[in-house]
Amino acid sequence: MPDDGWGGGLLYQRLARQAQRQPDALALQAGERALSYREFAQLINTTARQFQAEGLGAGSVIGWLGYNSPEMLAALLACAKLGAIFVPLNWRLAAPELAAIAAHAGLSVLKNTPELVGLAGQVRALAPTAGQTGQLPTGGPLDAGAATRADAATQPGDVMRVYTSGTTGEPKAAVHTQAGMLANIDMALAVQGLTADDRVLAVLPLFHVGGLCIQVLPALAAGAAINLHARFDAAAWLHDVAAWRPTTSLLVPAVMQAVLAHADWPAADLSGLRFINSGSQVVPVALIEAFHARGVAVAQVYGSTETGPVSIALRPDEAKRHVGSVGRPAPGVRLRLVDELAADVAVGTVGEIWLQAPNLMRGYHRLPAGAGFVSGWFATGDLARADAQGHVSVVGRSRDLIISGGENIHPAEIENLAATWPGVAEAAVVGLPDARWGEVPVLVLVAQAGRVVAVDALRDHLAQRLARFKQPRRIVLVEALPRTALGKVQKAALCQSLSAAAGARTVPGQVQDSSTGDP
Image (cartoon, rainbow, N blue to C red; front, side, top):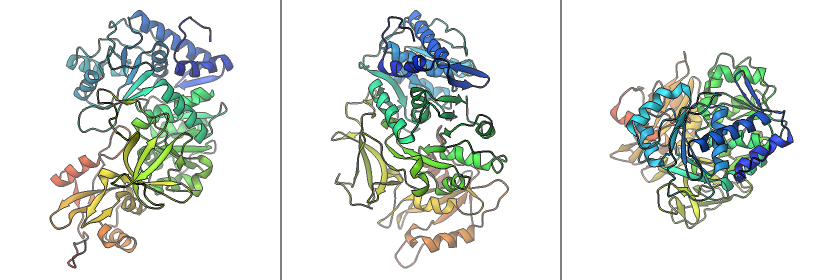
């Protein structure tokens, strides 16, 4: 790429390098539109110049509200080039939620693509000082907008603030640096083996680090081709897996389930896939085995918004030998599993995941330095155990842990058993208050379309495989589980719904409390 005298940030330079190496190779396919690496580099530079023309530059905070598009990726890399901060916004949130984030982020400007002009207008009306108008028509010029208002909290090297997918409490944004994102690219390439020969089908939202940083940015750094879907659609995914023949794709469990439930799944041509990757939560074994049965390895990446996200990874060549594991620490990652006293636990014992790594966030925007860290380690809140070879199995969130009669119950253990039962599409386990035991586990099921779940037989199945204190005291059928934008089950919302007995039908023949003194 010709040098225009700007220099540019490290992240921009890394991604732009492919325009020099292979200018005519396909970088991005978006519907009928195809961009070579040269054309993508031109889009980045055009976007950067347009930002400059609006008075946006180093320290500016640029919010982005739009479906997946080449323009979104170009805006991020333009920010990297200029030293500005990119804030991808979750378009699934309501306008008041987005307005609170816009104010918290200190946006200099809010950009939106045409399909979300109405939502963006609502956000601006609710937070008029958090970012002036500035619409980006797909493939067209930017409208002139706000003068720069740099955020005093910004530090040199910052490039992105990503708001966590949780829905409770005040907005919380992980601040990522260019150096951290570059480290994450190298780690993602190492654990997945991505090269310029790969073809990546990208369908997860780029407003989250999973959709953006596990495969998309690493693939661009490697010179691979990306087919970028604006939004996930199971039929479109299955069509392009056969027609475009990607070598890999990243799917979260809810998306995997949607693919498996589609009528085209049984006959789908999956032969081009070298592997798929998954993560964002504990991946049910039943989903993994369904892909393995079709000859497609299911690799995994464990991480979070704060971790870059690549932290622990199950590599494609290990996937079929270690079903249920999220793998081993990625290169450069230090892992500890600790107990309540911050002491390392023994092999095979459950502990909280603590991490040190070069791709971790710098910190939380507008929170004290060190928030989320303990003695220099990021405390994830996730619980896991590791075997003697270092393979890690996540058992759930520490706050999801159910303590019943003094015994610890990890929901994932029950969920994995229930998810394999005939007729069950999804399963979630939560703890509800109980006067006698403190908490008791409740199993919530979503049935497959047109199927009936044999609940009594399922209860017997669980009784044969679980200690009595782990057996669900209630089994509840619901039409759908409440989820975040990335498909994670919102267990707090589920607990509230169950407590209110709203929208759910309790199944007769529930497991009864023991009268022997044991739950």
